[in-house]
Length: 341
Image 1 (cartoon, rainbow, N blue to C red):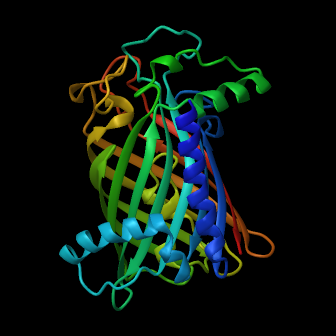
Image 2 (image 1 turned 90 degrees about the vertical axis):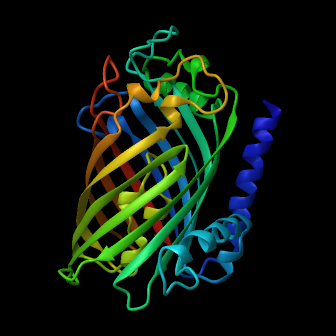
Image 3 (image 1 turned 180 degrees about the vertical axis):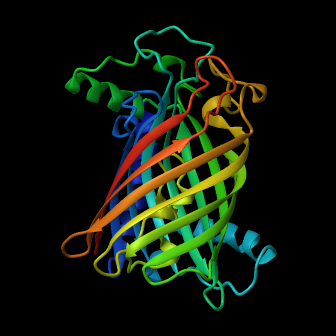
């Protein structure tokens, strides 16, 4: 347990030092997801997450240690797939935790027909690039984290105790119980459509990732209303469960708009269901999972005083599991409170 706490303090230290590096023209966002925020009011599947995100377009922030690591990967990937790209226009650093539970959480026994318990504590670094001419752009993200820690278990059961909900008793069977390092790198290409107007923005995104989520797909994204934040810092299609670093918008003025989109993806691997290198008490095999997934979302962003914004989003995803109790549609809601610094 001591080495787990040490790792968390080190991650938090990197995040804090990077945030202090520069504040001008930056955004700090606190986000939380919960399936109880959705109309279905369930407590299962992707059940909750919380994250703190710092995003900046300043040059000094690009030199934080995690950003330098992810930029090195970008230097390998981007020259081979596109031209006209120089330094990132913005970068984001995020620290968060999220978790998954089966439908029945009161029992400590394993339900082999449902999903396993799983959780992730992570640190993510993202970069936004714009090609010459501004008609397209790239977003990349590198995430390092640990599966199977007790952080999410402890916080979930503490909250359930306060609100009088059932305690989740099966966390001892979670994926990589006790902790296992994990990694993901993603890259996305955005094509900003000619139909876009100042109060209506459209884009098509092609994305892919390798690591604990290995997948590729395409998305159509829309927002309409009073918009002042730049297109390359609004990427809701790239949110992977609780990870929002590529998608935190940067307030450029007063905003008030609706947004939404849909995506289709082919997923080859999901560590939250299949586990990694360590053996886990409950894992699903590739044959148990759907390869093709569809996702849709709708949200609303409202700007308040002094560059403060509040966003709500409802996301729905098709079933990840082919059969059994786990064969069901996923739905969850999210809130993001952001402040321009």
